[in-house]
Amino acid sequence: MREDRDAEAGDAIRRTRARGTGRNPGRARAGASTPPSDEANRVARNQDLIGQMTERGNMNAAWRKVRRNGGSAGIDGRDMEATLAYMKERWETIEAQLAAGTYRPAPVKRVEIEKPGGGIRKLGIPTILDRVLQQAALQVLGPMFDPQFSERSYGFRPGRSAGQAVEQARKYQSEGKNWVVDMDLKSFFDEVNHDLLMARVRRLVKDKAMLKLIRSWLNAGTMVGGLTESTEKGTPQGGPLSPLLSNIMLDDLDKELEKRGHCFCRYADDCNIYVATQRSTQRSGERVLASITAFLEKKLKLKVNHLKSAVDRPSRRIFLGYSFTGGKSSRIRVPKESVQKVKSKLKRLLRKARGRNVKDFIEQTLNPVLRGWTSYFRLSQTETFARVLDEWLRRRLRCVIWRQWKRPRARYKKLISLGLDPQRARKSSFNGRGPWFNSGASHMNAALPRKAFAEMNLLSEYDQLRLLRREI
Image (cartoon, rainbow, N blue to C red; front, side, top):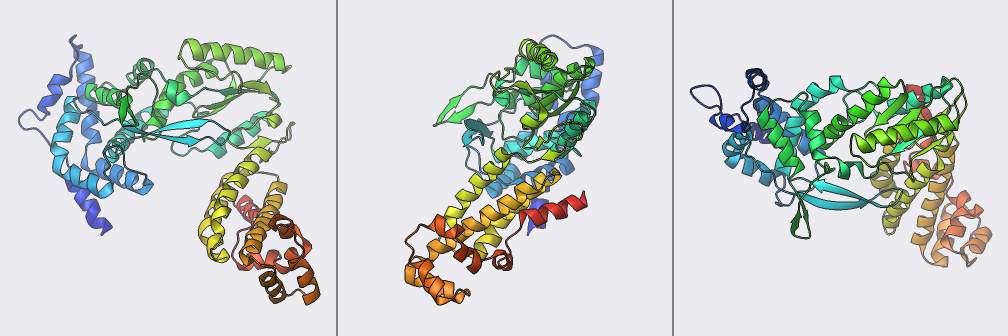
């Protein structure tokens, strides 16, 4: 069935070639009012980025990528199947509009989510059609821009990861760079200046139809409460093209840092600069912070969050969820703030466990979260946090089980069935204390030891971490 749908998608998004000159007639109307030079016309013709974007194989790959990612519908309400049907019916018109530079995307749907550290993150969810088109454009534009990016840019790039950025940060510290300038950009994705961004896109993109398409996505607007709000700045998070555009915008920052000889790691809008002077002091870091802040605010028109940006020891800052132990032999560690975030998430999940089979809940709900979290933090060179988290989670599960037993008499019978002697079981069941107290008491630890949760297939963070560390 899936193969049939892929074949249908391929037929639906096939290229529509114009006859005669071999060019889409709409392309001739895409020029500016001032006639471009012969060289500019030649470069634009040779690029034909819209043609590469709408090529059947590229569009098929974009469709599969968007389908794998899933996600909700945009403001048009069309799901995957409805979007496929729409594209089959309207593709020739859509492609002609893309080539002519007249395609107009739908406004994005505003979705607000809570940030882990407090505040609201605004997402803009495009329609599935626009997500497919943005993904197709990304597959063409990404290979053009990526080789130009800095070696110290790690976010949203093929073959690069947050883990590599953290490892590089540790290496800087081992070289004696013991002060970090932690830059925090205020609402970066909401503040990007469209004109400045497009000027940087035009450094490599000469195809006017592609430039118009990118501009139309930036200016698509946002649907809020049934009303469309104009977007005069920003690149809404939620579309496949947004991460590339953010890297294009911040590449000027990377080049400026390289020109000044700074050691830095950047992952999207998270940037750490490690001070490299013969006698590193906090004052030299503050000079770097002031200078780079002026560059960002004056040249790139971005806002620096002065409350969150700071010059400090790396061991007192958090970078991409990690921190460090400090010193020349600095090790990567997981700070208590990151542990607290996953605890908060697990607490919310555990509220849904009441009334469910605990073993099924562990396998279907808890383990995927634990596996993903441990996989991300596998770089940690300290392990105490994992032991503490394991103990906390087992106690939380004992609390859930104690609540499920409900009445003292039922608890009495369950404790006996789990191996407690009757006298101890009776005393514990009728002690009148609350679930949290009993979940940490010796009788519940004896009735449900670590082995009992292992038999329920509960993943151990500590065991997982040690296993993943051996694979690095």
